[in-house]
Length: 455
Image 1 (cartoon, rainbow, N blue to C red):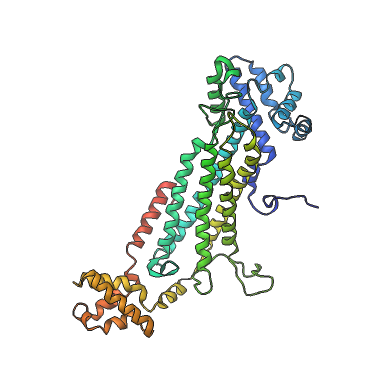
Image 2: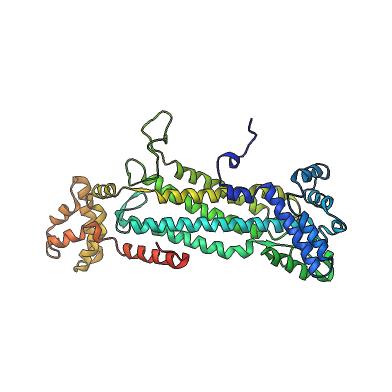
């Protein structure tokens, strides 16, 4: 029987991100830190290049086996020391004497975590960019598609669907900027010993730490305790939760617009093979959007233990370690999965333009009340007076079931200010989308400039 327990093992997530947070890659990253430390020592003459090269040779899971590390850990109950011991066993000559030289466990663990976070952010950035491109193509395609804007889940005034999607684009562009800004703070390692003073590295401490991090392409904690500041992790996890919540917002909108009584869009559905319900054969459920919304809740839930892991006793305790082993793999794997699903949804979204027009007609002209009011005000009726006229006419339209245009046309005072043609013009939805189309154009131009692509 398959012993997989976590849904990430068998249901959610993509292989690329899972590989980053696999046990083998964690050990690979930790060994890479050990190798970088040895190289830094060799560059300063603490040990020879030959010894550093030997340590680098054994800093590889194909040589220092995971199985051996686990065997040692079952006795030592210390994962880093188990790895160090296993590496020493594989070393030739005197190289084993210099493995982990001057380091404390979290010099290795936190720096390896920074490598994993760095690789994860790169995948998330690519996912964000791919989603932005999918959104931009959809916005361009639907630039002129008129639909009803809704506030409080009620009809408001006309917009274009491309305008709606452009709002998603600018939000994701902000997330893209945030990812770039957070990167140097989130990918910080440390090589400063037991409580961060660098005492175990002697006079070469500053040089060793800088050379290790330069070698690995990381920043470093300038004033560490035994660990890097966990505010760094809080920031990146909260950003991940922010991005996930944006994706949930888009998914929620699609779910609402796909409701049969609205039916303005539909997420992709394979009508040949896909099944919506085990008993209701007619159903085409928005399962991908629902999936994104559910997964967002898991990402957000990880912010709480991340905040709590910031608060450690004195220079450090171990209460953060177990929590972080859950937090990072889940946050990054789920967010990557969500981005890919959201991209697929928007790439294949069915936009039902005819239904959008039909829904506009259901308002009996009431969505043009503001347009009519503003036209009346422009013609010399005071804004507030115009508002009261249109409000009374709107109530009459609802009660009598008549089109707002017909009710307004029957008001004698209006004829002194507006012609029938002017009333008709004010009642045309396509005439009252403001600068929606121009906003779409500007948004797409921004995407092309920022991402260096042609939409």
